[in-house]
Image 1 (cartoon, one colour):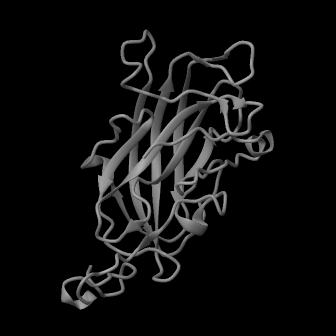
Image 2 (cartoon, one colour):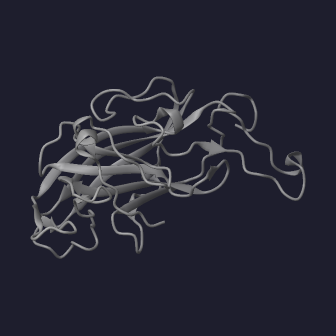
Length: 241
């Protein structure tokens, strides 16, 4: 799934808010204290949308540098963070992140600067990158995936919610970007950013309604659900642990 660049307005930058993509992901600029030339734009969500219970999926971790908005509101000063494409550079990009998948009682927002404090009501946590290392997607520079299978619903109807905790360090080497209409490129200084951010689906987004979708039960066909599939419901409901 390809992502296009989406800008953050100056007001949104100051408020540490972000515009989201049409694909149902949540975007933030980190660290939360905006500093020219020292920021990472982190977008998180499910790789496959809509996300269904008992269907293989992955977390999308999408990384750009971010130095400010272009005159065109759909663009910004920043470049994709690409560990493969910059591996031969003198100062290559590097990504050293772990991702925990979270199951929560409710769609509860994290708190703290940039969502750095865990939301209340976490029921279970699994470091999915231990079994499926975070790898850059083939042909989609800057998008990193770790694969897993959500086994329970987590949405407003069934209760429960899914989230992700992204933690570690991202480094981007020096680069440049020229906005449309500019006479010269904008220099992008090298930067290393420590990331510790929680993302929660649906109403757990820090920027509602710009969130990634929660997990729904998959539609059975051609038989009935009890012919081989039954929705699990929220964790602890006693159905299909």
